[in-house]
Image 1 (cartoon, rainbow, N blue to C red):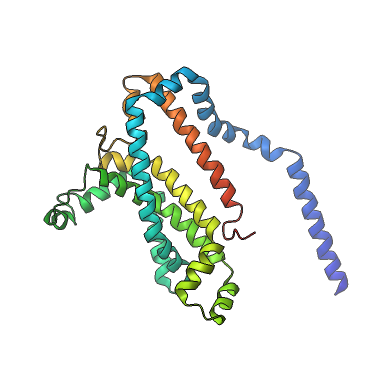
Image 2 (spheres, rainbow, N blue to C red):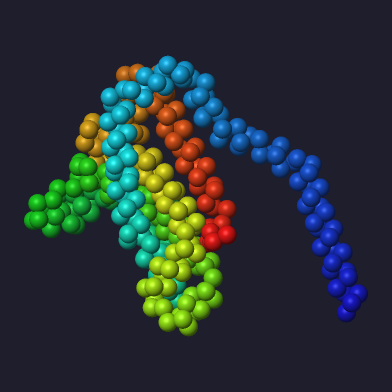
Length: 282
């Protein structure tokens, strides 16, 4: 028996050495260079294509400022809605033992896979004047399509799955022993959720919130079809860049560079929180 264990250990050590030699040889990096260049070159080209004066002009452009304010306002509203409704939903998905939760989780992931244009058409069919909810909304005086709330709703649908996935994983990985200890101390389920579970999962929840916010800021297709592209009403930053491209290519490039800088900032914050998706009480 000891001989068998020693044999297995020698095979394991050989496997680890083989993996280290493969990594140290740089073969993985060499094979990955084409994909790396494809991913990096567009952003690098944006940096080279716009000068500081053009970026400053884009920053002061009224169309950019208006679209930026609308994007920030709508995406923050969308994020608040996602957090308020998505957090308890993610908790249920993570802790429910029923097969129903697995089916619901799969359906909620659909917007990640579907083209945004399909989501936009679906929103029109659901909330448009002739849609499933159209008559009910009209009866209470609501007309969602091609309005500011349509922008928010499109961003919620597109961005929510990213938060739900991150929050669900964080809740599943949380240490349940601490919850059991809190129960023995007489805490109610609500107290345990707010005082134990949320602090344990805060990194995962913050990472999901940042990812959802970034996705909401960059939403284009569903917003264009469901909310339109009306300056000052429904024109977000991606739509403003699209419209500006037709009349001033250099201004559109400068706007894109500003959005790229914001994306890099959000990505840096996201990487920081993703280091410990289920915890944070270090």
